[in-house]
Image (cartoon, rainbow, N blue to C red; front, side, top):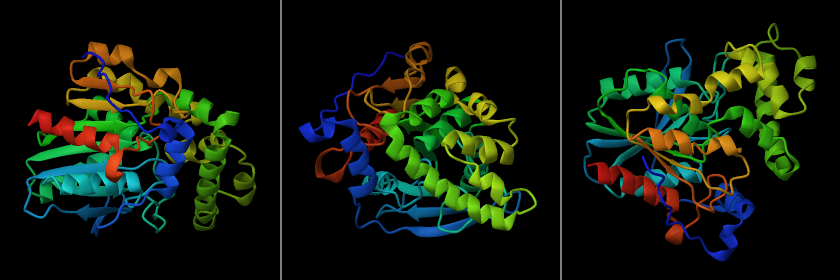
Length: 320
């Protein structure tokens, strides 16, 4: 499918990737969204919390939202999309990955960029217990990678899933990891590392036979974290094995669901491989939009409705 030309034109200040990223992540607020929490029990007896919000009238349409690294169902990029879709007669469910809903999960494993097994269970739960004839998927950063991998790795995709949108996707994980370890991203890197190590200390108390204090103290970088915990807890040999097997880039050619990827060219988290031009040109179901601006999960726009939110609504509406 031809590359989609972007119409995103932010104001002068939000043309800077850093400003757009920080404002969207730390300053933006989304008000007047009522969410109802539902806990589902997974096959391994762990749990995931789902935060539902609904349109004013009964709807047969649903958007499923997946957050990024150390996000949750209340992040503004999640609630902003949920609110806009609710206002346009689509229900929304914000998924909190394991350990991300404010309560630590029960198992040693948690979540990661390729944890499609949990998404499979969530989709199965929704399609078997709810009455939605149209389901859309939208993921941000890590959550976007999960969705793209889910759609292309050979899962049985339910007929109710009509479209997907992935925002600021590190679809080549090794390249994105390299970018996060550069000086330009040191503030982001250290913030992520701080949050992840705080959670890992809780894991260490829960599972002292698996994880000792010395190992936790040895972590100096996100790569160390993926070597020490992410890879080992989820069945990978090491961080690079995890990156290789979970990068969604290799699965894009197999996607049969209409899917829109929006990756800003000034996203400092993304390496050149994270702009899958070749894959989009060769797959008629894959649409790629590369705005010059937007940063990482930024895309600040007018009236507190972000560009990626408007585009997501437009994309699914055009398919109807």
